[in-house]
Amino acid sequence: MPSTSIRKTEYNPESRILSVWFVASDKRYDFEGVPPKTYAAFRSAFVKGRYFNDHIRNHFPYRRIPE
Image 1 (cartoon, rainbow, N blue to C red):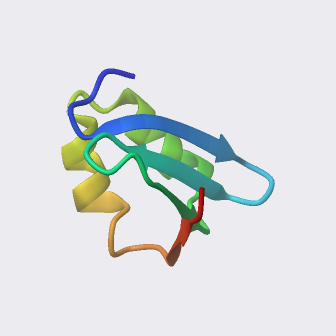
Image 2 (image 1 turned 90 degrees about the vertical axis):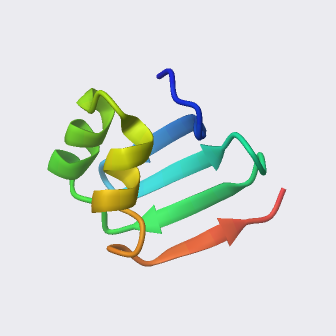
């Protein structure tokens, strides 16, 4: 998953939680209620950071996960 802003993602389809680690901060955030269809589109997006900003950030509740 090459991206300049997103280092890693994990997705749990049962809980619909998308975990995202960011390159700049190396912090993890969990986004809740992300549908499998949205995650699939995110994974296949050519520019993952743009898709994330347009379709996930500020669209789903999230929380920062302490290290």
